[in-house]
Image (cartoon, rainbow, N blue to C red; front, side, top):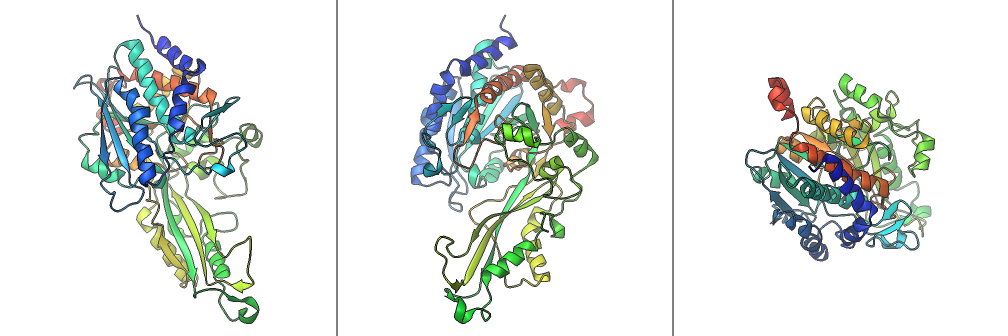
Length: 486
């Protein structure tokens, strides 16, 4: 009789034998950069047709490409692939998600001998754009279906897979696609992979994500620049005004000073207990794994590091624009611009984030600073699924059995994902199982994954799929537990 351990062994052998290197190289070789353009659309199509499509076809999936319902409104709105494998109408159904788009290659900035769209292994690292974000993550999940199917002879559940091409620009159109295709995507549970583990050697589950809202502050006072000797002291300096406006949003250690930005009822007792055992790596551990050391004097002073990143909002200045630092002119500029971002947790009124900036700046005397919503990045909402859902305990037990250790369970990822489309629109309990780590250089040169995490990720997902045929025992649950399970 085929066993769970045999399926896990097949998953491990796939990486150790080198077959993973050969197959995954084709995924990395597709430069599926976001936002969508004519060249990138062809690469999206190529990835669907020649990389992931044959994997799905060989397992009996039916697949179809859909145009984005907001393609006319957003430059980053691309294609959706939906693939289905239905074994029995009465069987449980899982919805699996991933995104095939990546950020730009940044070719010239990679270390010597590395290319963004060529998979290269050095030691325990596989380098290539999209390895961590998100190609290995959905590749491992799809391959784990094969290991389960080939070992067991069936899955014992139904599968729906949704792959998109616009996550790096905020998943424009995904929410509307889910609203318009709720029946097509209907399922009992959502399982996907993205983002980093809490630590490289600690399996992790997270149940939602922080939201992300991008906006710009612009100081635009006049056309052109004017000689700083002739006009210094007479013309308002946009750089000075903008930096003071930015400084008013937080104090010198990053504590949020806009009252509406400080979340309400986010750090509940249950969330604090959950985060008590989930502190980020200490300095020595972080350095060994290639992660930067945490700044202990940054952020909300009354919170632990875990509470700051998983239970609170954070503000960042992503880019500043003023003159040319390489060749500065002795002139007072006419314009300065800052691209900003607020990461939000549940308990924040997302619709009031940008209006609150306007009110705050007016109150602080900065009515001359414009506040503009960033048009290139769709806002993402914060989500957090009930940690008492039986699906969470089911996933915890499955991963513990596969890996031999208890996974860290986070109420939400520190980063942002379109989880609201699945948790809120489709009403699904959402389980995320990341296969990367925080030092992976995603969104930067030298992006990579770790070979041990790739192998363990394949095994964890194979174990989850093996166990999904049974899943939580809903027949023994109370009515309240059933409601929590979705």
